[in-house]
Length: 79
Image (cartoon, rainbow, N blue to C red; front, side, top):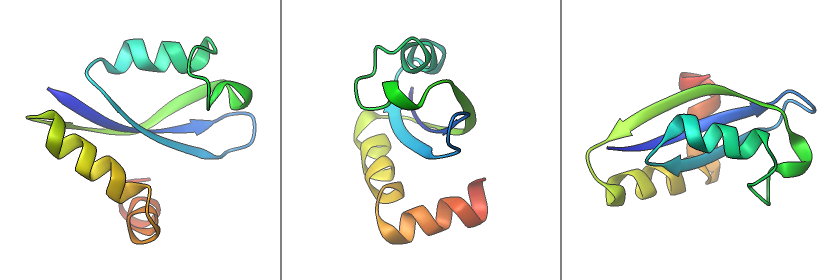
């Protein structure tokens, strides 16, 4: 299974969208500073996630959530 997830920074309330095979490990990486892009905004809390049967579907949905209409969809329906 592959997961798409949304994290919220407790520092500045910003959102981070990503995908992974292991949600617990990936959240720990974000909070330990091992994820370069998000290290300055930690700590994070997991706000939402969804499982997909394959990596291709997960990456497509992650890309959608990072675009304008997908971001609006996430704010309105997922958070």
